[in-house]
Length: 439
Image 1 (tube, rainbow, N blue to C red):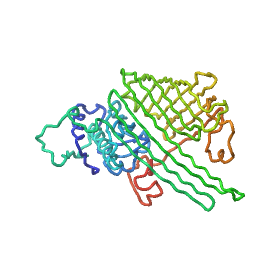
Image 2 (image 1 turned 90 degrees about the vertical axis):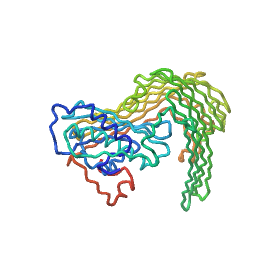
Image 3 (image 1 turned 180 degrees about the vertical axis):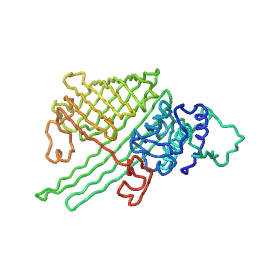
Image 4 (image 1 turned 60 degrees about the vertical axis):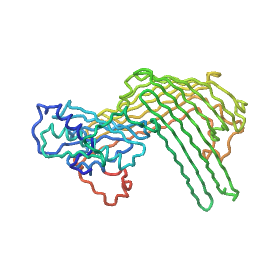
């Protein structure tokens, strides 16, 4: 894709959008390029790439100086890739002219393919707003026909495609990490496998993870401390959509977790979820409530503080989540409570939240925090922990509360334009394709 070319089948959609809208009455013919404020967090938010590829707009640093405020949100899709929702919010002469475009990447796409797809979608949206402002000779559109395709042949619809994988996607991964010094060394081996099938009505998922971690450290008295931990987990998920705002399903989890004194555990939890907003709005706002209840079996490596070597206990949880992404910033909060049914004094409550709020021109406030209280650590070993296990965090310690708070602010000032891309000494900004630059 070049900076002045919109490529691919999405190009036709641009003309449909343009044909359906007239220029706002207050807009005047302009020769100055369209001003864009780009608001993106998460995967594939490589602003430097988009500024380089789409150089026929002016990328401004502050929201207040833009003709169009672009918000990009994403979530995992059924193919193992991501679905991107790109919202265009008109400002100034374009106030009230809003639009939404979507792009979906595949799990097999490399980063370059994802970036090219998002760039194409952004360019189509920008072309519409540039036309509404009366900008001429800004872009040209050229459709790209895949090799070997006869244009006279009919394009089949989605329900006519024979998918040999029946919507299933798979992922296999693994890594080994070796570190060492004169007096200490470590070896970490990790592997994973997952399988997912996602349709409009069903989610079916399977996930397996394995880890083998070894530590060898020389103490001050020249004695050697050695520790090897092997852990694994297997989890499954089955979810069915029963209405526009309701879903029902169950999850299972089994594994070995030495850090939590569990030689083997198995849990199954049916659950019910309600979404106040329609699920399709989840990329920009979501308010959900979830309730789950089920039994869990645990076999312990060491006898617990309750004198148990194995036990089966019922547990239930209630969780509320709210998240929103708007021009004024982002906000999310999560409240969850868990409780054992055999002893209601064994419970925990946790709060997690973050807020990024634009106070005024150039100044934004960022607040993030988490807090939990209660005691449901039925797995704690009765024999206590060694100093090495505490310092290296090899075993979980008893605690009644945890917290984490971070407060900060960002203030931006100077030139409102940042079209120029200069990638000299690019290593200082994150390397090739990194998230560095001026945003």
